[in-house]
Image (cartoon, rainbow, N blue to C red):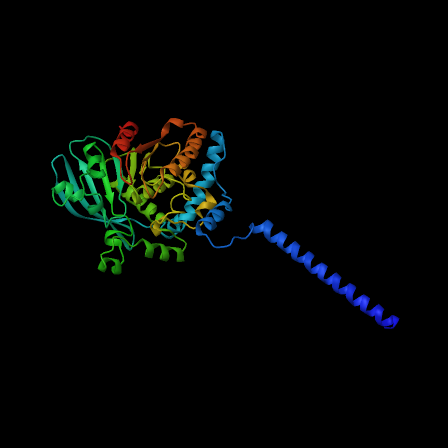
Length: 385
């Protein structure tokens, strides 16, 4: 082999080695970048791991980290503004800025110590909500008001058991309704049918005898930047507007309470409407990640991007400095008590910063997913009577 040929072979061999080395280096750098960004790859997909990592990657804008009352007040203003936007309340306020509520009364009945009235309240021009009002007799002057929000039953009549308990037929349970408890305690009680239930179900769900239309409501709301929770908060605020104008309501003594889905509506309404002076949400308060983020729940619970604002304790913290009692069962399978306790620790920190540590309580009932009257009424009466 002549000298030129040997030299050519050496050059080609050396260049091949160089290319191989460079390729290995690039491959190593690529793996290094990939590993530092996503973590080491796993052998199979695990949904729980995936979602846990996704939640951990969120950087909430308004998780409360302050210590002083000034910190609280600054945070409160910002958090409330962005929460209302996330719920779609800003869109409702803009669209119906000049809307005047229309109402019709369809029934009045005497039940001894109180009267029962059934109304329809149009909270939007095409949303007629059935509303039951219980009014105590022989009460002079202004009277405290309690709004009792129901959970996932077809309507207030069946879920809260007002009619069965008042008229003594077909009682769905041995527990007295929240609204009836309220009127017997001397409150005006308003029990609205929550939007997506009762008469506001879709025609398809009515024909199929489905209890609610939450999935359809969520899907349609998302198309226009609204949410079922936002719609329901709007409804409670419009009903409160009407109640204050129509009944002898003491505006300094207005409360809201409800169980499960009613607890959801209670918490978010009190967070967004400062006219609610006392809130007692039952069987709802928890962490988002430890409840609706890891356990199957109704579609109506979900708010796009809510974890970017903060956790549930941050939402509940907007109720401060007003009194708030969390009522919860130790054996609740869908809102685990350990997550509720974790959230309550963070909620107490917000009330401490607001300089009202004594206005927030956690009552733990010895049971599951239900309303614990023994935890709710002492707190309501203490703060309203």
